[in-house]
Length: 207
Image 1 (cartoon, rainbow, N blue to C red):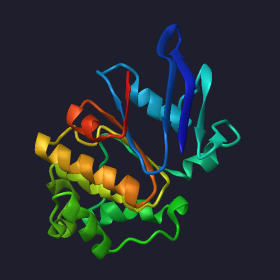
Image 2: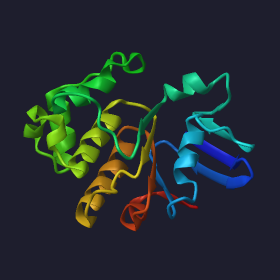
Image 3: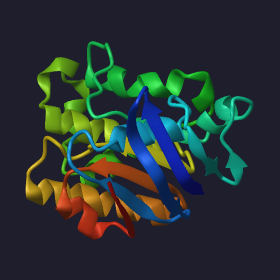
Image 4: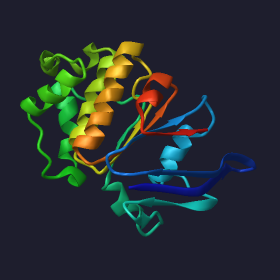
């Protein structure tokens, strides 16, 4: 589903990535592990076509990323940044926004679907009617993670999904992601500092 082959990327004279290769199949959970500033988020941005590689190639679902293919490839990707708080009065309004996008036309969202996801993530469905600014960062991370996984994309890319969570909740999220990858035949790639998450992954790229 995702093939990163000998990718290099520089900002001016500073080389951020050098000769990076990584493959991820449908049904697999992978992670990029490394310290701050090592290029983890830059690699995610390159996969989505927001950063131009100076060498190597990236393929998504067998299609090489290029200026000609980037728009269509983004239709196959669900992306969750580290901090995401969509402007909306309630949690229900916030989670509904991505389903209104043209790229997600026809994807269903119901309270029952959210309840199914949230029960696996340790979230109470009663949060749905609360003001969007009343939940913790950790709750918001899990709420938007569930939305990302409900969009039905074959490639899910997540930046630091457990940065605000304790170890037990991190393990809960890690197991959720691994189950989603297998159950929905998706490839999931997460950037993380967490060794707890990395230990659950099928594949790990160390940067």
